[in-house]
Image (cartoon, rainbow, N blue to C red; front, side, top):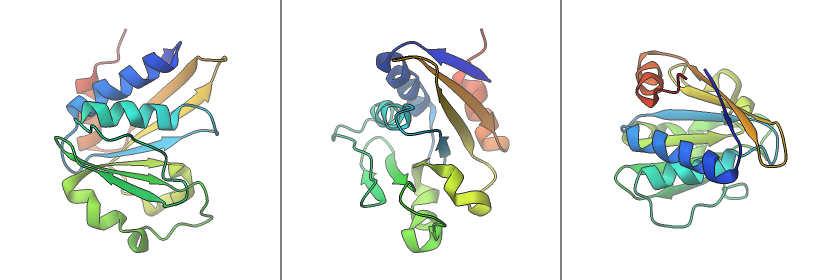
Length: 150
């Protein structure tokens, strides 16, 4: 499924809609170039989860955890060549959190298959194309609930 956004506010709003639908154990993998909107989307996701803290990309600390209606674990793999997910605490936070991974493509096959992968493409100064792909039943149900169909 593909959706185009025409502003940062639309990208944030789409993230907020998805966050409102998430349950513990949800895994969202974000892929795309720098500046494509991954962190903007993650901020919206956090808002949908009821996170009130300022959400920033954990590029240097690798993972930030935020409390909300459901805990959000926000990972950024940008600086890692071949991330060791167990040593990052990924599998410790996964069952009880909504886990969002920026630069998820760097994890290769290390991420669980049942994840919602969102690929970001820059289409203009403020516009983005987001391509959603569900990898299993949990992520498929989430994508259906998001109801992106025209």
